[in-house]
Image (cartoon, rainbow, N blue to C red):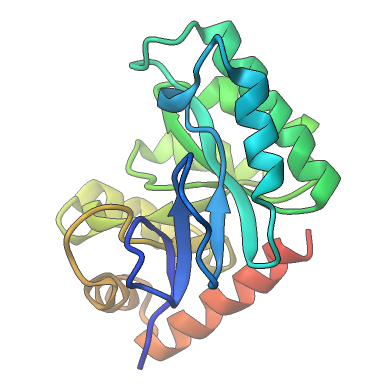
Length: 208
């Protein structure tokens, strides 16, 4: 069977959400579109938002990936301004937000109250305490390749409610089936049931 890949960068994978990069043409299957912190052009932000709005076609599933990144050489206040504008766009068009976050989790949490739609942290691989704080603030968590080998992350995932979980390959070179089988072991359910649950989760975030 096919397993849903919540966040990926591979155009040959149709059963999932493709992350569309700035300047690319949208595919005819579900995609997300946003201004990643590393792609913020401080002298061209308005043009970037104009492009973003122009790409909101029928198969656009989510805004993102967008967020905050402490390693990106763009001033924090500008990153926050661009992130907030994308949250407001998400509210306006009623689409969930896929979030990229590097060492700025508590700043991201502070923005949660401004969002009307679901917010999903992609590629989550941080401490258990951060996962708990995100869950308390009604975030969903999408897990990737690190689950296959990171024992601490496996322990965290075991405690995350199934209705808050997504699975993704991101831009890593491995098959999403591997991840589903590992997570099904951790959660004590079949891979098929896990896939069903993730599809249910998709419907939940799609409907706000």
